Structure formats: structure tokens, C-alpha cells
Image 1 (cartoon, rainbow, N blue to C red):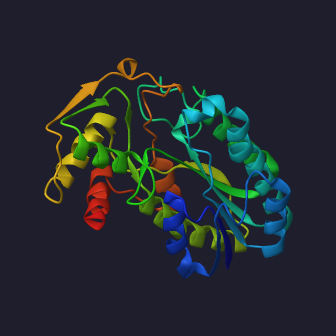
Image 2: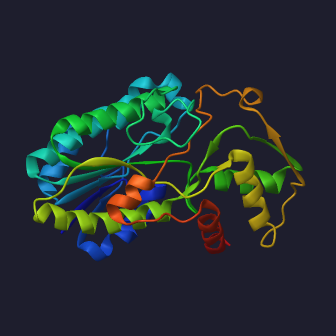
Length: 293
């Protein structure tokens, strides 16, 4: 099996570059090797490598910045994704793509199902939804995994930000009315590798069906609860100044991009289809932080 991984240096991409290795030949490219703003070059790379599977871990993820950079967000998250899907269709490759809870408006009182009505509140969510639609309309074999609140020991993320701030400040004010499931990048990568192996056999047997699946950590918390757990787990390993983590409302922390209050995604479809049970978010966080320290 030949796998083309796009975005090897991102949080999820770095983990994918390792998790996918047992499956066959992995051609892992970073943004310097394949620039998503150069769609013609992107198409050429796919045609040159002729992979069996394309795993796209590239995305424009600067949620607030996207409000003023709509064109850039759509170029990366929709136009380039459309090109990848078209090329996947041409060469008969399976496309694996990652999306987000931000395609929903967060008004639902229970976890979102895959076929719930979409209504993104910000440009980032709009661009990711456009990418999903492009894939679905391409005719390619695809799996789209929507995930939430991704963290890792590498890169820029909430975990790393809280560790930095907790070392500098006595008090932290963290939003407590947005609810979701923190998801370790490694769990996303390991689940992806398991699924790719399974569905390639399904494709060989001519019984594969494309689809959208929610792929997140189990359980739920708020950003405030997430921050509390990070500080609790970090305290034995490093010196932190933070003594108080105060809960605040979204209205008390205005941002350029509006965010959904409910980011919970139901993962039952993933479990039923692939037999994968995602670990609890706090269990994954503990494992990640043990490695970090």
C-alpha cells in the first residue's frame, strides 16, 4: 500500500507519519514540499506519486485570523481540498480528510450526530464545511473524520498555552460555558491507521461505502475543566505560579470568531462501523503529559 500524507509536521500529521508506517510505503510531505496555495502543483504531486491512499492533515486552523483572511482559509480548506478529491477520483485513491465541530452552531443540547443540520458560526467553519461538500461531490472514495479540541505534546494548542500561562500568572480566567471533548492527536492517528487498513480490504472486496464520522475523545468538559486538569497533572512535574483558575463566560472573553457553546460530537457511528472505542479525554491527556514531562 502506498500512502501519501499531506501535512506531516502538524499536530495530527506528525503522529500520522508514525502510525501509518506499518501499513506500507508512506510518502510524507510538509507545507514546504507541497504548497496548498499552488493547486496545480498539488495536483501534479498526487499524479506523480499515484498513491493508494491520500491522508490530508493540512488545514488553515487560525480560527480568529480567518475572519479577516477568508480567501486564504477557503483556498486551503476548500479549494485545495476540492483539487485533492478530484485527483483521488482520477487515480482511484482513498481520501482521508479531517474536519471540525465548528461546522455546527452549538445550539443543540445533546452531542451532534453526523447527519445533524450544519450551520457554521465563523469563516473557519464555513471553509471546512465547503471542503467536506467538495469531497462528497467529487465521486472519490472518502472518509471524513470530524474532531474537536485537538491537543498534542508538539505544536501550538490549548495544552501548551495553559502550561506556559500557568508558569507566568497567579490567576487564569478560562471560558467555562463551551463544552466539548479534548482529543489527543495520537489517538486520531492511531484510529486512522486502524481504519485505513480495514477499509482498504473492504475496497478490495468491493464493499466499501464512503462516509462522515465523528472522531473525538470520550466524555466531555469545558475549556475551564480542561485547564484545571492540565494544571493538576503538571503540578508534580514543574513549578507553576497559578493558584486560581476562574471560570468565565464566552461573553466575558470576546473573540473575532464566534464559537459554538456545544462542541460535543457523538462517536457511536465510528464504534459501530469500525469497532473503535475512543479513550476518555482525561486518560489521553494524562498519557500525553507523562510523555511531555
